[in-house]
Image (cartoon, helix red, strand yellow):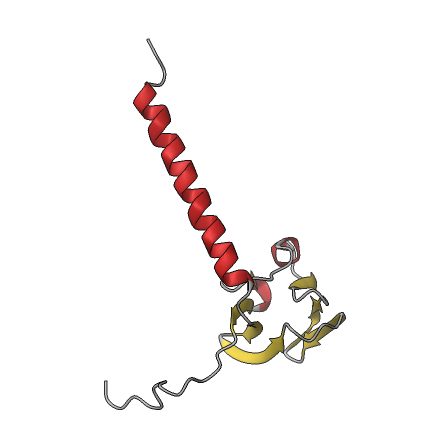
Length: 130
């Protein structure tokens, strides 16, 4: 009895190739997008960090001074230190691309990389109603 048919292998290879193409397009599109880091504490935005500053520094937020972030000169950011038990936030590594995020759940902190939105002439100013 055969474990795989020829069509099974072709199907799996097609999925792998399609995944690599979409992943490459995503990386290519978002790698050049101007980005900023947003730091939330208890679902409230407490700090916005410009990733294009080209400086290397460590900082923390006033709400949780024991949680330390590291901003790298290459435009990436990461959790450097935390007093939480599991240290998943520290092990999440560098974030440098739009859409990436990391969280320190015991300290209620979320770090997200988002697009740096520059207002356009035809942007919506206000929405009224529900």
